[in-house]
Image 1: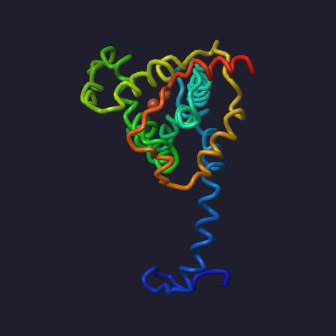
Image 2 (image 1 turned 90 degrees about the vertical axis):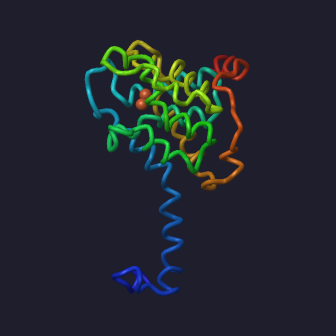
Length: 208
Ligand SMILES: [Fe+2]
Ligand SMILES: [Fe+2]
């Protein structure tokens, strides 16, 4: 069997769907590579800043790495703006949907709402409400998203910053997307890991 027999899904039989299942699993296993490759599109997404969206993403991830953040945070920082290409009006939600099966819920939520938290740094200059993030005040991860934007996002537009190469992060992306999707041990509902770990940061600095 090289193809299913049906042209409408309702006509498929048990044999058809048994044939498709391993193909779907095999395709899904390439998600990490595809997501990593998709970062290239951020290099030309939109202009005007002093660095590209890809440069911004790498700089966010570099800062997270140097702060001693764990792999969930580093990969989330790298991918937090991948929605800019296809979802410019809800790019945060787009990135969160991609990350959701594979990282801690804390990180997914942070990425999902980061655009509202970023407004704290500029919305008043474009006639908007800089405090729109306050609607999330009661959320357990409010401070995490505030810190994410303060430490890794709003400040990562600096062409003079010493970024790590994009390739440095490839193994981390592949590791995260190789996890079992929606594994409770990965999602770790309710668990908050710190963004900054000074001990790990010092170890990484020494090894660099
Ligand atoms: Fe963003
Ligand atoms: Fe960003």
